[in-house]
Length: 421
Image (tube, rainbow, N blue to C red):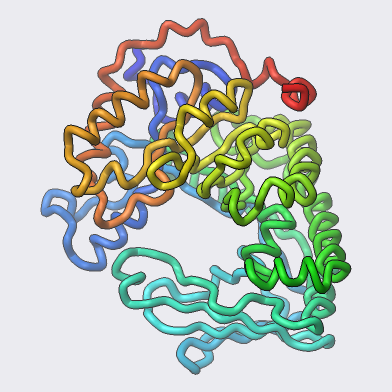
């Protein structure tokens, strides 16, 4: 088969299997750019009637689409939500895809504040999300202003909710999205974050978590234990997901947003390393590849990630977005995990001269001598150049086929060998 005949999805699956493909896959997210230009009516005239799938096809880059693999029914919980003080949502025992962040019901199209109450027999928890007008025009999501747990009494309420939540599979939704996108991209079923990252980013927030680890360690570790038990119950239920479809849903991802300054090496060793090893072992037995969204500065974690059991570091961000040079990660990850990303969005800004942009891409490609999934990290924004994305896509198509023998390095280096690395 001619290298141009391979779809982005087929190329991606070769890489996920550890094989060097005939052409490097280039799969990324253009949603924020497309949404922003639609809202501001600034799409180039010839793109005015293009939907997101056509944009990806015409530009020549595969579409990355995240889809939740499951939801939870909140037994014994009443949920009320208000936008700018006016109630717009009220349901008892709702099914929520994004717990505890509640992105399901928070408006992404209107600037303002959304307040959400979770009412239980044990008491109530309160969330607050904010969205600025500039975020709406930029195609960005709301940000969390108040986390679920802010005082000692909230732990017992959170535990009440966690102990009663029921798993609701969304496998048909995942399959439907993959059928829509077809070969022009990859649908990635999302899991929940690992327990420590849930506490850090969703339940308590950074400052509150670090204080609580010092003053309320027992409560924090009790909550970590419950979240760990929940994931150990959920993950075996994912066995049917992607069965018989190796080029589609047999890759899953933790949306962890790892950052080495927040989840530092000592915290990673204590709260994340063993957790990743347990969870990836369960998923590997199902024949799945497993990634984590690692869009932060990974430099301090480079020596630890190969021990985690993760197959992929997705949205890997190198300099100048972080302190981590690509070469350091490339050297550290020789036996895995795979890198997905590596193209900083700053290279696609007008302030970066075209000659410098082209030199950066060409220098990156010269280093690559084993499987990788290329993508723009972390987000392709309104001020980024769609023409430069198309330039990268053309460049990859023009590259000669790899002389690699196709040896699968991922399958040749099991977790035990990685630990000894």
